[in-house]
Length: 303
Ligand code: GLV
Figure 1 (spheres, rainbow, N blue to C red):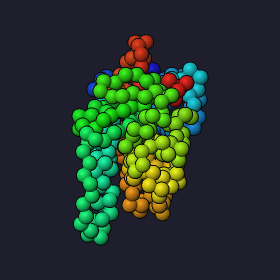
Figure 2 (tube, protein in one colour):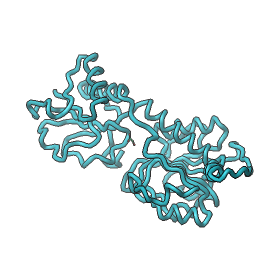
Figure 3 (cartoon, rainbow, N blue to C red):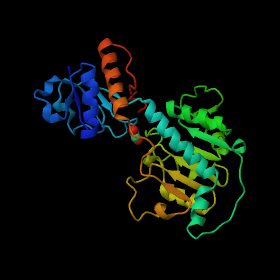
Figure 4 (spheres, rainbow, N blue to C red):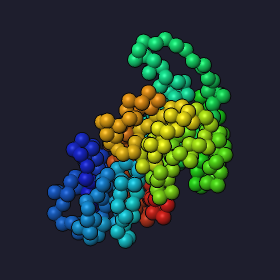
């Protein structure tokens, strides 16, 4: 029942330690594997091009929260994403920072700072602000709780429409009213066929004039040309992007230097090595016990 981890040396060293402490063998790197038929579990960000080299593979674990980088799994191979409190907290922190920065006009003040220009603008109250969160999974709920605690009026948009305390939930049929009330729109959606290209001119046109976009979902959800037009027309006031389209963002891309846009290079979260290894152990044990797998991906919906 071999478990193979394919990753960079710093992460491999921590996983090796966590697995050793748990008394579980771990192959760190394909070069350690003598018999590929022994491999039942594979943890990686992207797998080898041909997963068929491991004929007895049962399960692949993405070492990150997302799985859109993964190919279609071979018949009978299950896919899990990493669930880790650290990922949730890191993304929450980035999103809360971005929401406050945009809501409190920091792009304008950063731009004024480049010419030493001292000029105050209206100061908005958080409790007068309406925040709309697209994607109400673990991270969305944590963001909602934190921003709600700061006084923002929080709404959530989710496919399932599951109720969340203190949050007005809008289901898939209610995207338009949800957007009408989003002074700050936060995208935390996974990349699927339904969400690819979703953040486009049509969607921006439904938002309040001068609204802000906080994007920590996936770059391919955003039409960057439409974003620029929405900023130029005043439909959107500003945007903070941790994910871009394309990614990495080319050196000469307009978004780097546009004063209305702040870009960070996909750093909202990075899986803590120990938490990732502990999650993998939990998956391994659940699998052996025939129990529900934490982070199991429903391949019919793509997350
Ligand atoms: C990062 O984006 C991840 O999926 O962990």
